[in-house]
Image 1 (cartoon, rainbow, N blue to C red):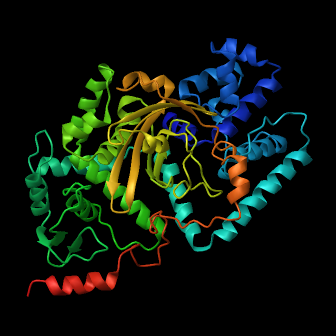
Image 2 (cartoon, rainbow, N blue to C red):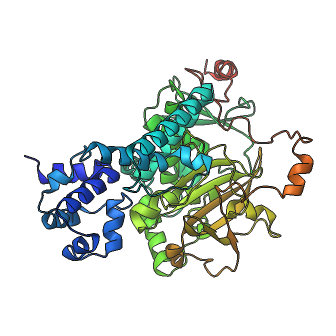
Image 3 (cartoon, helix red, strand yellow):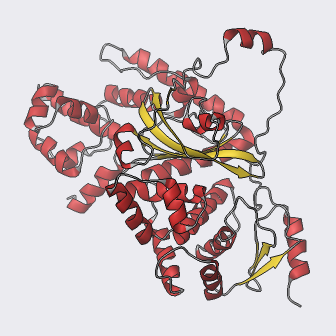
Length: 486
């Protein structure tokens, strides 16, 4: 017998497409129309249709109501197998349409109608699987990096980019050093290092490929004497401490490396913008309908990018606001991206977003063309998946300028400062015609141009086993040997 807890867990894990098809199959078997089922459960037909099409997952309470109306049980609806072979085929085609191959090819999804015979669906599925196989086969070394990126992003989306276990570690360390509120000072960061058994040492010969070097044998963290004006000088210390707190070992593959980077960045932000204080600040701003990344940045004395990152951690889990985030290089290349609000980013066939080019009409790109480039830029963008509002600003780094953007669906813009903006654009991407050069220019220069990319070469570097991307380990070892206490 399945317990209530087990049933709830199964409801969370079950694929929405399979659940929807089982509900539709049961409804049609009982001779009920969509409208009749909708009336029986006191919901609009459009809501029932969204559930049956796998576009909306019903809560467990609604699932019980649906099961009762269909004369079945929740356990029966939650079975993981399709009702029959035809439905299994329809689910496979639907899932393929929602995957990265269709998106990368710019193919519009279509309705899988009953009039489509099995052979048609099997042919579509076979073509999809072959394209997917070819992309995977061609990917070679970078394929591991891009697949790891896609898998981690899927996990972050599933968790609304909120990690309670990391929030707890941050809270425990802040409490241990006596933090009672307000911005986390440099002295408090030094106290954290001391509490964890580390001393800080500022040197002029830090290996150029590193932000910090930790000597775990002697409990030392080495930092550069000259700080980058674009980076918070507390962050390298907290990132080093975070790796220690999380028990990170040398990464064995690119997936390990990415996960460690995400965890250390998350924990660093959670230490600089503690959950309780940040949620209180943002909740007050939401009540006043003036959430602002600039205000969050200033209240906790952090960089704009750190504030934007931290907002994505807390927006959905603590404020019920779906959100998207991008960091885009001035070349148009996406460096980082996250979404749980239905926005569609460009991606390759593996589902990876990093390294693809952002639509020229999105806020993250148009901000580079405004006259006042260093003030917040607000814009609405109409897209095939809805209208989105974004706030963006330009930041500087050694590899060039980049935009940091945070956005929400139109229905949630009411909580934000900058919602009155008159700026509006239309993006039809992934339609190739959206960002395509005018035909005259394309014909004139297509065969006569040979550009050299400025995109950071380490953006999607593959990770040889046992090394850290972009770091000269010999240089690091020589540095540690020279600075080790005698």
